[in-house]
Amino acid sequence: MQVGNFQSYPFQSPYASTGFPSVGANPFQAGFSAFGGGGINAISMLFQLMSGISQLAQGWGGFGGGSYQTQQPLDYASMHFPNLQSYNPTATSGYGGSGTGSAALPRPSDPQEFASYIQAQIAGGALEGRTGVAQSDAIAGSRFGQVQDSTMWQASLARNYAYQFAAQAAGANPLSADGLQQGMQAFEQMKPEAQLFMQVASVFKGNLLGGPGFYDNPGLKQLLESKGLNQFINDPQVGQTDVQTIGAIASAINSGQLSLNDVINSGTISDLNRYQQVIGYVSGGGFASDLNNYDTVRI
Image 1: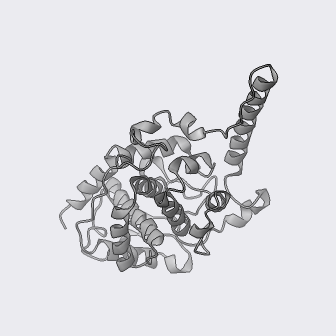
Image 2: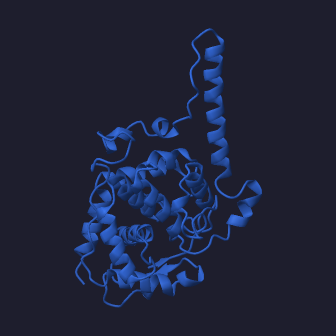
Image 3: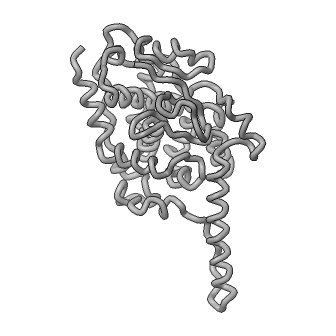
C-alpha cells in the first residue's frame, strides 16, 4: 500500500487521489507569496467579500433610521455549520470544553504501531522534508505493515498523525516512537475541543472521505498573530509545515484562547463541506469504529 506525497496547500494537488499530510517544508509557499504571503487566496477573498456585505448591510440599517449597532465580524462557522451546538451542547464556543465534543480515540493495540509508523515515515524522507509513507517500509509483522483494508489503514495513519500533533503541542519529538507515546498521553489530557480539532485535522488531511484536504499554514500562523497568541509560535516551522502548525493551533485551543470556530472562520480550510463531514465522522464515532476494527485485525 503506497501513500504518495502531498503538500500543505496547493489548490489542485497532483496527489488528489493519494497523499499523506506533510511534515516537511511546503514548496508551494513561494508560489502563493505574490498573493499576500501564502494561503487560500480565493477563500480569503470570499470571506472578505461576505464580511464586507454584512458590514454594508449593518451600516445601511443604521443610516435608514434604526439605532446604530456595533458592527460584528461575520461568524461563518455558525452560518456554514447550523448544528454547531450538537457537537457540544453545553459549550459556549460551539465545539469546545465540556467533554462532549469528540468521540474517544482508542489507543493502538499493537505495541509496534508507533515504531512501525515512524520507520515508514522516515523511510519516506520525513527528515529531508519529503512526505511519502509506504506500507512496505513499515516494520515487518506489525499491524501497520500488514492490514490491507484501505479504510482501516488510513484511519490508523490519521490516528498516528493526530498523536504527532499532540506530541508537537506537548513539546515532544513528533518524529520518534517515544514522542508519539508521549503525544498519545498528552492527547488524552487535552481539552475535548483540542482533541476534536486534532482528530479532524488528521482525517481531513488524509484520504478518508474523499480527501485529502489542506490548511493554509501561513494563514494559521497569521490567525495566532491576529489573536496576540505569539507564545504558541515557538517553533520556526509554525506557518510552514503541517505538524508544527497544527500542533501550535491545538495548543492554543487547549489553552482556551482559541476555538475551532476561529479556525473555521479564518478562511484557512480548503473544503468546508468535507470538513463538516469529517467533524461528523469523528464526533459521531465513525473514526473510533474504524480504528477499533483496525486494532482487532489478527497479526
